[in-house]
Image 1 (cartoon, each protein chain N blue to C red):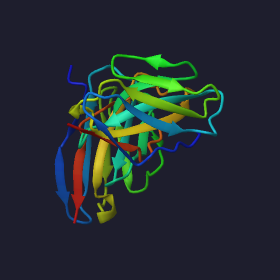
Image 2 (image 1 turned 90 degrees about the vertical axis):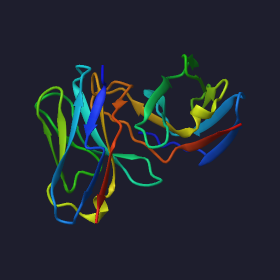
Image 3 (image 1 turned 60 degrees about the vertical axis):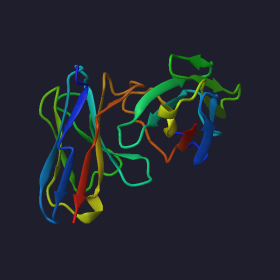
Image 4 (image 1 turned 45 degrees about the vertical axis):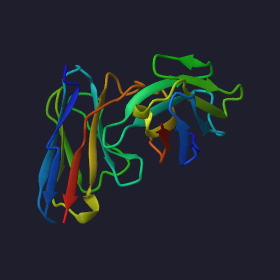
Length: 111
Length: 113
């Protein structure tokens, strides 16, 4: 599976958009980009995933560059409850392939 | 729907003691997982079970055993606890092994002294 690089931490003002970057320059054609988050002391929570098209759901938007070497998770109106560690993961959907969690980005939303 | 439940929530063991961490899911999922998370680190996969009756090693299986008791339950056993096993343990489940969305339990915080 391709490795990912994320900034260790970011700050965001409450109510503003939070843009979390992820580099995955060695991603292969059949690898998806997944985002999970982990709010303090809780189990991780799935947010969104995509292959090459931009994706949006009720929680966030995922923007993947055309060359697929990087992506950005966007929380459109961050709240204090969005303070968490955000993990960017790339992997295929092949049977037996499993999620590998790195260190992630600590997002601090401040009032 | 309780989702994924784990017991106990907290546990303190002495070196050499044994214990079993319990995990159950009520979503009729086929695949289940055990992870550990050390302070400031991401999750690391210990064991997983693709379906009832099968188990496989993950990234860090040494010192652990697992049992997929039935479709609902997947337990993790520490036969002889060591301080290096002090960690938070998370259980997760998915419909299929390749599914993108894993559902995680609340975790068990284990301290080995």
